[in-house]
Image (cartoon, rainbow, N blue to C red; front, side):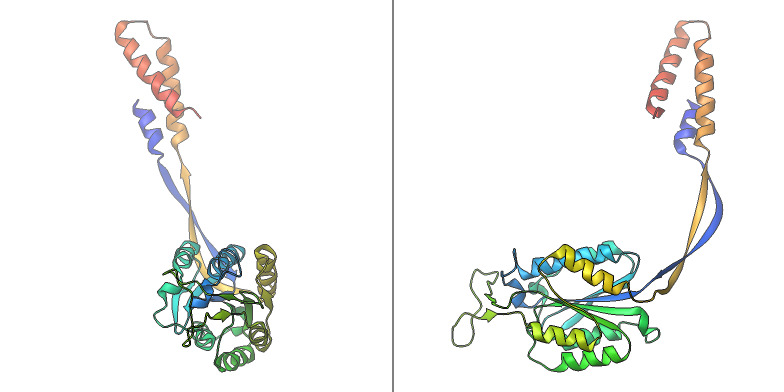
Length: 280
């Protein structure tokens, strides 16, 4: 019983410490959370479709550092560059137009924050992915995209929505209306998103098939040369449980050869139960 308990404790000895260098790129994902993302021309909605795409893209780009920006009328950094996929996905799952205190679609601000989130050095190892329906009424996005492109940062855009457009159902059950009381028709601004991607020397995709769209963006991002993202230390441990379990088994076998007395029956039973517990 004593050696069985030691075996269960799995005593270990620390061995050689190995240093591992992580290589990859930095990717900032800017996700649109404006009210227009409630539109349902993509099922179940633009917002849910965009989040599913972003989730799959994070999986495809695991091993790199990824950050998340959420934007509507204002932009904010939800998760800085990190290799922690769980933290990224947790914040992504909470993304919703309800988080936006100011409504609108200001892509230029989102691009500016993405750019400022990078280290100013080694721009050729960085990329930005903008996921939006493109309904921006300012010219700042193109200016920012050109600045980003000149720095050597790749900028890809993902268009969410359709050319025909859709009305915007709000959480209170009503449909979004303009100042004159007419239902607002939201359409994806494909031309704007294409121009931004072109200025950023990147790729535009129309979000229609998540699997192929993720593959397109991931393949483009994987063309970027990788750099050292940091160094981690991994310690190896040697386990000694098998020696204690071996002694326990040996003593258990020896016990079966002892004279069959009443005092030994309880001990034999205890050993047998412990052996069954430890058996693979």
